[in-house]
Amino acid sequence: MNEYDSNRIYDIANKINYRKTENLKDADCYVLNTCHIREKATEKVYHDVGRVKKEFRNKKKPIVIVTGCVAQAEGEILLNKEKYIDAVIGPQSYHQINKTILNIEKNTKKINLTDFNVNDKFDTLNVFRNTNSNISTFLTIQEGCDKFCKFCVVPYTRGKEYSRPVDELLNESKNLVENGAKEITLLGQNVNAYNFKGKKLSDLISEISKIKELKRIRYTTSHPTDFSKDLIEIHGRLSKLMPFIHLPVQSGSNKILQSMNRKHTVKNYLKLISKLKKINPLIKFSSDFIIGYPGETKMTLELIKKVQFINTYSFIYSARPGTPAAKMNEVNYKISKERLILFQQTAEKIKYNYKKSLINKKSEVLFENKIKNSNEFFGRDEFSNPVITKSDYNLKGKLEEVKIVSCNQNTLFGEIEKNIKKKEHAA
Ligand code: SAH
Ligand code: SF4
Image (cartoon, rainbow, N blue to C red):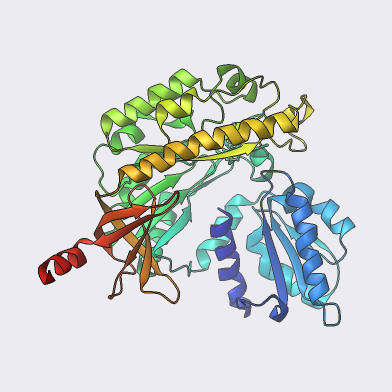
């Protein structure tokens, strides 16, 4: 979502003649968009601002603005501690970036914008055309969270659940497709809780799928308890909806899930997975896990072995200030680290075996980019696996059938069927 937000911040600032630069030393204004989900986020801000300070030691100071969830959670502290920062703007206030920049240009007063103006934000954003022209692009449809998992800062930094109107989203989707998008990933902290005046995520997906030139739809991140029947069903009938779901479970232990306030058990998580697999046997899953949550006495690997996630993201628990779990006794860091290593070894083995099982099989790949200084193209298959393919003609934006010929831990390497046929013919 920060990537979507950063692009939108740029679309707005563009209107007052600010352009992107690849070189830090050329910048007149430096916007640092931040994430607060795990530790060291604030340290990273001080570190990055320090880099800017050093670069501009003997030059005119650029405008320095910190946006995102660190600004929301610790804005006042940042402003007090690091005088080089001119403004902090939370994730629901960044539509005010131009006003902020213009004010800083005029005077030196520090600015702190951390209200929850989510309605205002999207009303303003709608005025600025989304200029992103990626083949695979993001669209924020929902923000915020009412779940209050005990470890998580999101409900405090992004605010209450909010769903954008269907019409607004259809317009922005069409706009993105006109810019060249062939794949849209619908974003939300709780994307499957999307509900605009009774229209649910499945209704929105149905509407967006009618855009002819759009080939693929994905959505992330879902919460297991918000997976309604209609959303399960649409996976059985809409071929544009990719058969790959990111479904964070966080733990394989019921005791820990309950203590996290996750509102689901291992059993009903597995039941949901079987329902989805029943409706579409092709569906594969990825997930997030927190290791070393307070009270964790041992780690279970049973769940990842059972589900065979094709990708996992695992993190050592990090106490976030202001969350209920921050008051609980932490597991010894060394023990958590050992558990994490074991977890990741097991998860990576599953992932590599899965990748190897795709060799000699065909995949449908949407190509996103040419790799610099080579005749290779980067794309993703239906399950978001990265695929690299050589080609003498431009594959960017093309959806092609590819035969997978080799792989490593993360990437598949393939050949275009037409090229294979050409070679066979020549032989
Ligand atoms: N809404 C999603 C997750 C959003 S946060 C869900 O309900 O699962 C993204 C991921 O960051 C989470 O899935 C979790 O695994 C991780 N995370 C969040 N807070 C964390 C914390 N305090 N310590 C470690 N990992 C955390
Ligand atoms: Fe955070 Fe996700 Fe839980 Fe919401 S559902 S509190 S975003 S982990």
